[in-house]
Image (cartoon, rainbow, N blue to C red; front, side, top):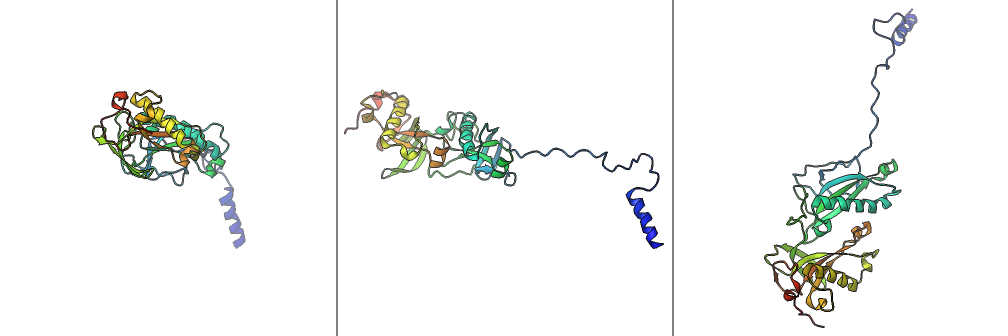
Amino acid sequence: MRRWAVAVLACALISGCGSLPAGVDGDLVNDWKPMPAATAFRPAAGTCHGELAQTGTIDDYAPVACGGPHLAETVAVADLGQATTLEAGLPQAFTACSKRVTAFLGADWRTGWVLLQPVLPGKQAWAGGARWFRCDVAETSPVDGALVRRSGSMKGAVKGSGKLRMTCANPTIKGESVTEMHPVACASTHTAEFAGLFETTAKRSSDVSGDALADGCDRAIAKFAGLSDDGSLESRIGWLGFPPDDTAWQMGDRAIRCFLWLNGEKMTGSYRNAGPSKLKIHYSD
């Protein structure tokens, strides 16, 4: 008798074993809403981050308010084209980010105390089909090149008189190396002034010779200072040239930053369009 009672109870639980209440059809799932389709992780533009990253995953994605302390700011998020590997995608992302970051900062980002870092998906996400890239920027210290933990957006920071625009500075030079750059207002006394860029096609920074640096910076400074690029140029000016580091070089940054330098002679005011009357011949072999 005890076995029979258990069997009847099981029948009641599983099938109802009799007529159903009104409005009940016995199908437990036909009124459930379908589960939403899974969506792949994609970062957002207009966000800031506590650290600078080279790859981004959902697990380490922790944006912070741009009004508070942070190291990096995401300017844009876009998609790669036909890149088949992460390694191939990095220079593509760098080129695309250069245009977006320049528009965001208000001038060529390479003319500012700025680092550009494309951020790509992690290996697992890439294998799963993710092809987004982030365009992150960070402020760098001209004194030692370290990243600056800042508050506030960098939007427009290289435009006109923007705070991160390279202008005049007092460099510290030891031997043949510049160890520090201390930016100052051009109206005050200084020994160097940013004049412009020149780009090279060399595949490695070590392939750029001293003569190539001199020729490139001479031309950039001549254009900046309103001088003729002739035989007298090297007797009128000196230069300091700063190539990108190896990491940036391999991503595609081949622009040398050139500063007018008069062998430590003090300058006051900008030397833009100074011409030969102000930049007289005062070097000799």
